[in-house]
Each structure stands twice: as structure tokens, then as C-alpha cells.
Image (cartoon, rainbow, N blue to C red; front, top):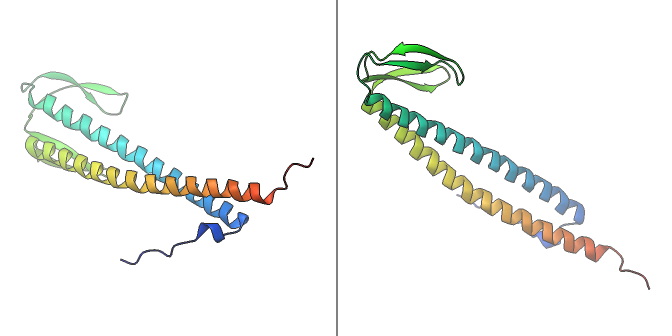
Length: 150
């Protein structure tokens, strides 16, 4: 894999450095948004995994409230705790056994955590680059501005 061309920041003009810093700051913000979304998705899957565990311990015929949305629940009863519907995205559900449902959640959680760790590393590097550009930009602006007159 070819490495991107290195830019010698100290040779850039103030305007070029400002533009590059703004672009890098935007990339850092996008990475932070992605990290937040991954964290949210992992939390939802962990909650689903915990719900599966709780569901597997309930007896058949047990009365319960079934969530239709985050704030709407309807009364229902547990018919078969060994079969669950797994939301695989875009409105598709697959019937799985309880064990397969738990394994699906764990696999997705591990994938998200792996992606999260990789993104943290990239975001940290980008943030360091943006900070370096900010310091260099400040130094160039100080250098360009006339000193106080006596």
C-alpha cells in the first residue's frame, strides 16, 4: 500500500495552512461522529444481548410487555423462548435459535469494538496533526505580524 505524499507544513503559506487545518478539523469531527455512532450501536447490541439472556430465563406462557417502539409497549406472552427474531438491518428479520441470536449479538459487538479501536487510533493521529498545524499557523501569524512599536 503506497503511503500518501508527505506535506512539509512549514513550507506552506498561511492561507494554505489555514485551509489544510480546516479540512483536518472537519475530518476529526467526522471521525468523532462515527465513534459516537459506533458506541451507540454497540450499546444497543449489548442491551439486546442482555434482553436475550433475560428472555431465556423466563418460562413459556409468561405475561410481559413487548416493545413496539422505544416508547410503545403492548401486552403479550412468551410463546417459545428458543426462537427469536434478529433484526439484520433495513427492516429484515431472521428467525434464529436463542443461542444463534446471542452469538450474532456477540459477533457484532466484537466487530464494532474492533472498528471503534481502529477509528480511535486514526482520530488521535488526525487530532495531533491538526494541533501541530494550529501551533505552526499561530507561529507563522506571529512572525508575519509587526511587533509592537515603541
